[in-house]
Length: 200
Image (tube, rainbow, N blue to C red; front, side, top):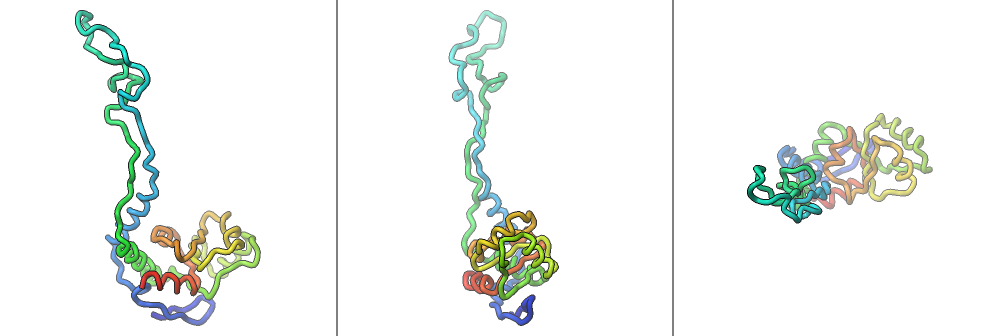
């Protein structure tokens, strides 16, 4: 497929990577798995055997008129252990490589159909100045933007890190969650070629 460049001209990209049919359930599954994989899963609580103290029986078994008790660290008591304590766990979902790449194809193709993907010959700033990057985005009439480049240079990284609505990623690390999290995506031709070679 042929796409128009923002600065003039056009670029030819593979239909298999940038003109795929949208598959909502696949994108949802991959995005959910990606977000779940980022969860720490480090929550932990103590059961009755792990809580300090409670070794002695608080009172004798019979004759007191009170309910029998074997430890003051029972889950029924304040300061006792949890009956079903949380344990460290992994929230990761298994997603095949073919499914992941298919979801990225769907997202990129949908961005093109919604006219949210802007392709440029190159995208760089001469100095690590935030105002220069803001001025460049204003020229393109963009605000909430993901910038995808072949490789991040120092000036672009420093200019963008103070903007909460702008994110910069390399083409080799771009993920479907970042692609759909922004209103628009700016991509260089070199980055598009790199993504095309990965998805073709």
